[in-house]
Length: 344
Ligand SMILES: [Zn+2]
Ligand SMILES: [Zn+2]
Image (cartoon, rainbow, N blue to C red; front, top):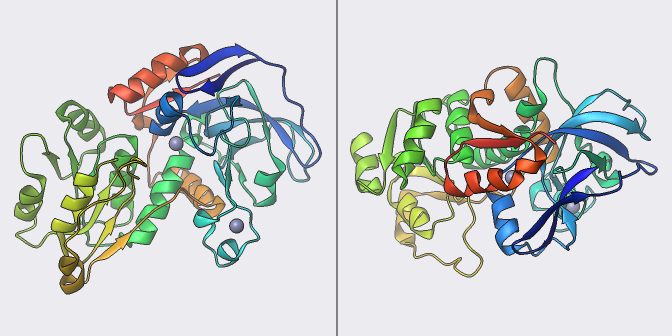
């Protein structure tokens, strides 16, 4: 079979590999869609500290069961696979905080991922109920978006996005688009989308139709949000961008008793920002993080897609075969696409 295997930063190879065999407690699937995201570009360029090469990458996976050694699953079942795999046993998992499990492993990092024709779903995934049935009416391509949507759902649950909120999403990539859509489904009053890249902002806004767009390259984002909210600020500001400046701005444009979601992480060599903590103190702001998603978030994401509450089909702007993976990564890196999915 064909796979995309990572060997070292800058060294990702499309090559032939033996088809994997499902062992006890495992399920083998034919990968139908594995979507790309910014993390794949990061891995390609810099590697990842959790990833021991050589490794087949790709972690937004949907496919069809070929062989099942697990009760409840059979050939032909349409499935979606979680990416982050909690241990299910530690104190954090026991308290329902599976997204911060310190023993977490990941598909595409610790186990071979979805940029391949076939994939064996590890027993560790099945153990935490991380293999999900794709609801009728949801395509494989849409189901592959459940994983990033699950991460977005985790972020908005932690930030308490709810009815009547004015929400600012900073970063108009695929994650930002999912944040806009999910915020609407949770009853947000208005959703504003900001980005410093005008072309990307316009492309995404044309699809997800925010109440206003803010190009941070042309106008001051904080001023604009304050104007749009009559000086109050937004109830929730979500930074879906690897930008310390965006995080600092977020605190300045959040309303009293508002929430700031530091959704996107910062580069590991520049994780420090400057924060006026008196704003947090006097305005009773809440700052929250977000780290991936739990198996339950993935199930809920599939339901949100199936019910039409969060449409994702129109976010998929490009479909490429596995041999087009390098073009796909270039598209992702350039911001010239919303979601690029690989159909191996
Ligand atoms: Zn991803
Ligand atoms: Zn755990």
